[in-house]
Image (cartoon, rainbow, N blue to C red; front, top):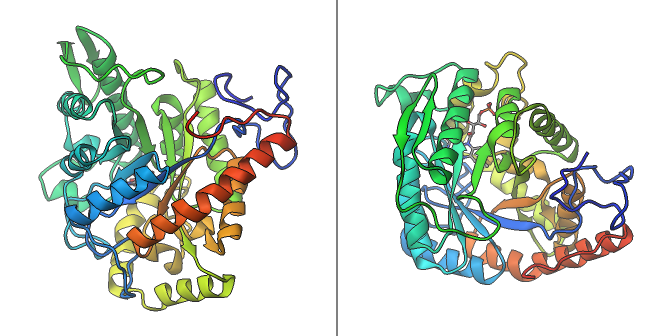
Amino acid sequence: MPAPHLGTHSPPGGAPEPTSDVSPWADLATPLTFAYWVPNVSGGLVISEVEQRTDWGIDYNRTLARTAERLGFEYALTQTRYQASYGASQQHEATSFSLALLLATEKLRVISAVHPGMWHPGVLAKFINTADQLSGGRAAVNIVSGWLKDEFTGFGLPWLEHDERYARTEEFIRALRGLWTEEDYRQFGRHYAIDGVTLRPGPVDVPGRPHPDVFFGGNSTAAQAAAGRVADWYFSNGRSLEGYRDNVAGVVAAAESGERTAPARPRFGINGFVIARATEEEAHAQLREIVGRAHRPAVEGFRASVRQAGQSTGDGKGMWADSSFEDLVQYNDGFKTGLIGTDDQIAARIVEFKKQGVNLLLTAYLHFQEELTHFGEEIIPRVRRLEAQLAADHGVEFAPAGD
Ligand SMILES: Cc1cc2nc3c(=O)[nH]c(=O)nc-3n(C[C@H](O)[C@H](O)[C@H](O)COP(=O)(O)O)c2cc1C
């Protein structure tokens, strides 16, 4: 059943009435949230020698962030990478880069990816408290459990087995939340010991936000279960509509069986690589060019690194486990989401994902500045019209963005 704090597609005041094409977990009353990947590593978001008019430097990123917030994007996600992989030979550190973007913007919330194995939760909670204070309550985190073994062993840090990484992540998130919301906080587990700690100042008191948002990225059964129990937001890589239904069901099942406190379950985000062109043919020709000019050794190297992260799981459901060479050219499986075509086709496809339970779309582009601008000016308004129509068709009151 849908969580009570979320809108449903049932008539106001009536019992939830799932229809055949709308998931019982879809929130038709609330506008979709839009986010974008911060290009904070070199080489763009596809592993290809195709031209990418995207820059990983701070000046380009400041302009991009300001454009995004002006056009209605609510979040930006900075990735964390300590060493070269998938051709990203240069990488800016995520938390410091995120803080720079927070200081360059006024409304945008910036999500910094962090690995539990690299940080003590108390140190991160303290860092985020300061970033939150400096930005008027706009700091957020994406907790990523790690797949690149060399990043850990290279620093002399333990490389845990797959499911144990998620056990650690769960402890880490509980600790963050405790340190952000309680005084004299205590927590003793397998990975962390916190003995009577009060962090001051805490995060900014933002109405409707109990503490900085905790996003969580992962695909495997262990990832879905942990996210269901402790995350505010569950992020998946690019997926087909059918694949996404499975992810949502797995996370909701974990949330319902766990000892969660409010919110009753995470909200859902999905990654998608957007190729919007004047015609469908042009969009697909662009995809063919990206894949045709893939940097083969880098894609194969990436595939070798992620094999242990995904296929080593007991049930083979890890991220990338079923990804083809073509899929991996966008290293977060963004082509699978199918946001490739005309503006109208892409807007309609996005709303199909909303019907499957998606609350947030995380976007990436070949030429970030110009294509994100196009997305904000042309596609978001189309999505808003379709969302309003969808809500009306189901007798749901739709709250326009910004209300
Ligand atoms: C939206 C999203 C963003 C991610 N960002 C990062 C990142 O910045 N750094 C990283 O090492 N892993 C990142 N990951 C990878 C996951 O944390 C995880 O390691 C990966 O899904 C493999 O685990 P699994 O097989 O259990 O799904 C991200 C995943 C998603 C879905």
